[in-house]
Amino acid sequence: MGRTMASAIIASHSASEAREGEICKVRVDFAFANDITTPPAAASFAEMGAERVFDRERCAVLPDHFTPNRDIASAEQAKRGREFALSQGMLYWEVGRVGVEHAFLPESGYILPGDVVVGADSHTCTGGALGAFATGMGSTDLAAAWALGETWLKVPPTIRVRFEGERPQWITGKDMILSLLGRIGVQGARYMALEFAGDALASLPVDDRFTIANMAVEAGAKAGLFPPDDAALSYAKSRAKRPFEPVWPDKDAPYLRTEVFDVGAMSPVAALPHSPDNVRPVRECGSPRIDQVFIGSCTNGRLEDIAAAARIMKGRRVADGVRCIVIPASYEVYNRAMDLGYLRVFTDAGAVVCTPTCGPCLGGHTGVLAAGERCVSTSNRNFTGRMGSPKSEVILASPLTAAASAIAGRLTDPRDVEA
Image (cartoon, rainbow, N blue to C red; front, side):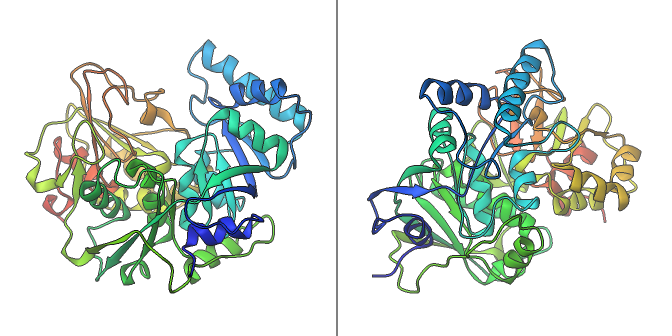
């Protein structure tokens, strides 16, 4: 019997057969943590008696969540992570040279097709856009991976998701993954892999694939995997910091089931409070008034996202009484957006542009919500209190919908903003 992509990658890194349900010891290609998860990982690393990370070029610390530090507590936390990374001689990038980890690492060539990647952050699954088995784990397991260069994985069953048809210009990767979540729910792929396929992917930009893979975990998935095509391989080859071996699923791979979507029939959608699977077409959401728009995060802070939002906002103004915060996910994105004039579009419109950081996505800083406020966000979660007060609300949407909403002052389908 053939292998799914998840099974094939795990098998390539293990001495086990790596059949569904089997627990395998696997070699790790890359392991990382951030400013929140590094201090407990460093403590566990010491407690287990480890002295050196297994490979200084394959282990990394990226300060991105509460940076630039918002207060003394976050400064102390970042300091502990910095000191551990420098003492180990492992990969580390300071504020001003880094970005949101799940955007910065693949664009910098550290997450590659065929890799097994582990990170102490749930959205590590973003790397699946390039065909890596990338998955999040707790700080203790991450510490063990740093010390040993290996971890254990239970081979997950796989749901195949086929996106078929010609994608309309108003439909983005965010609309596609939200549509999947609306169908299968936030536990619909719990400890499974999602493997994406279909003819609609051929024209889907790599940036949009990162968005889809990023939110696989919102369905409970262990990984979200795109078999690497020419676009993904070209992206990886132009950036790779080391050799890599792509892996593909077999034609006779055994899937748990297949979910099929006609992308041509999709309309822009949004996830209403307080769950990523509370998904409806934007035009059926009742046009609620909003106080804030956030465009950024590891989900939608890449160049395609910034460009899409700028197309909507060019020559327009953010509605009175609305705050619009734009945060490119990395300095590569920030600088390219600056060169292309997108940042000026945002500031001319009355938006705030901030340095690369996770920022308000997790209620960190630079956009925390007060009680009674409502935000349209391009991030990945809208649980109660996610971006600040437990009495606030977050609506998840694409950069096009977010930008249109900023202009209108209420949740708005981008097709309804005058061209």
